[in-house]
Length: 194
Image (cartoon, rainbow, N blue to C red; front, side, top):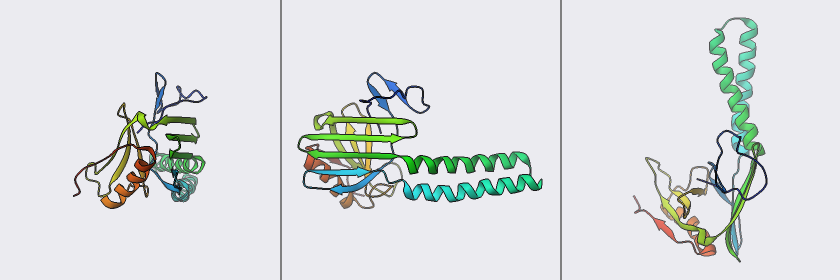
């Protein structure tokens, strides 16, 4: 999965981001269809559910660690481990709640446009459909869901889906891939249905 830096902002010092020439490689989450017109289809990362799902247990763990620490009934190393996990859950919640990420495939002109703003900065790019070699539909590893990958000519990929895990059926995955293909002219490649 990848995105290319075409905008302002220096992210070269941020952990997890690597700048190579004029490109920025990162791992964005799967985006799901949020808007569809005859001219374009927009996919968006929807992190609100994840934000709530991680905030509640994270706060509960931090509250538990605090109370156990004050009562002196637990080993401090165990409290540190549980507390660290609680902090990671709260951080994940804040990250998901503040992330704004979308990708639009449009037919006039035939382009793919990507936008991502989060705690680390801003990434935006706009590429003609010729910059992409295929939309690949397949199962990877032991996954029971079908993955839809928008593959750039340099091999980097962005994942699209109908939910956070991809698409549950081959037909639905192909339907989503064809929505992008019909607007951009990017060819769809599919592995045999299993």
